[in-house]
Image 1 (cartoon, helix red, strand yellow):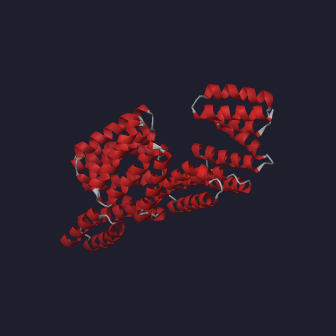
Image 2: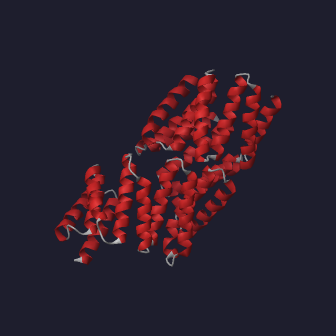
Image 3: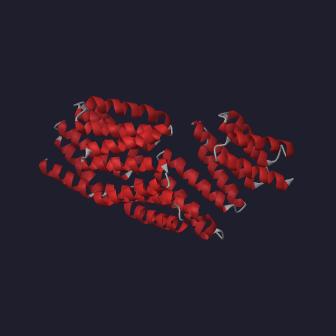
Amino acid sequence: MNDDIETLYEDAMFALGDDDLDDATDTLHQMLEIAPDAPHTLEVQGDVARWRDQPEEAERHYRRLLTSADDFWKGIAHTSLASLWASEGQDEPIREQFVLALNAFQACDADDRALSVYAALASFDVEQGEFERAAESLRSAVALFEASDDAEEMEPEIGTIQLMLGTCYRQQGKLDLARQTLNQALKLFQKLEEPDECANALDALGVIEQIQGHYSAAEELHLKAVSMNEAIDFQEGLSTNYGNLTILNIHRGEWDQAANWAGRAYLIDKDHEDENGVAHYHLLMGEIESERGNLTKAEDHLQQASGLYQDCGDAEDMISVQGKTAVLYRQQGKLEEASEINERILVDAERMGHGDGIAAILEDLAQVRKAQDRTEEARDFWQRSLAMYEELGAERMVSEVRRELAEL
């Protein structure tokens, strides 16, 4: 019977991974006939209920799974509860469940499962804007991988973790560490012949080059990622590439080109019903129309982005849309409103440790103070912004801020 339930369990998990709920449900019925109280069955019952959008039913099965004497299944139960609560936006101790899952998997030497939990925990912390916490989890995952006897088997997982860690370092403004870590991920993905992940790493490296004002290098990396994703018809990856090419052309002041790339990303996201992607389109178009001087269109896009992010955005998304709204208000002459937003999101960005985000907010606050004829405050904000841009190696912004200070 054990072999039968194991085989059915694998079949059910494969069906769920392939978005085949009917096949998973048929397999579950067979499992219920053979071993209704087996932990394998309880997990699949919970997963199927979750796919059917029955969170309370799913939680009931996961809680039954918690009563298992086996650490491995306890780990599965804690992970499933944390993931369920996070997806439902419930006010539950999500992080605590991930930590309990880690303890359970480490107690039974399930290193591969522990790696997955570290990644899930880091993703949760990033969504909350806790970048340093996320980095700590990812560094712990790397240490676990390096000490594991099964390291070679876990190379695909550690490549993903290195990609996440590199991105986290970039968000913190630790660009040298970010570049080093992302290159490690790229090298591993090339060895494993995983073109979609290679494209992700290249695209992430392109973002670093953008921050530092190396636009030609950034464009080359983004277009390489596009070519790789086009070769395997990976639409979600292409949407990300197009979004980053939009931002690159915004930096260059090429508004028509930027709008073209944004539109291409939008078509993919709309087709895949990716709400966050659609919100990102409106965010970028808000910035583009703002720079074109079409302030009414810009405001409409930013309002749509803000509304969508309320449902699907993370902490970084919310800071981004509020920051662009503050810029728009400054352009409209609503200086008090712009100042209020910037002061509020500066606190959030500093709590998150968001490197280039803090620098950008300080720079816009300086612009607001200049427009308010509060020269010394403007000077102070620009000097603080300059110090951060110099640390980031953001050559273009260093030049722009120095020019503003000289004019002041």
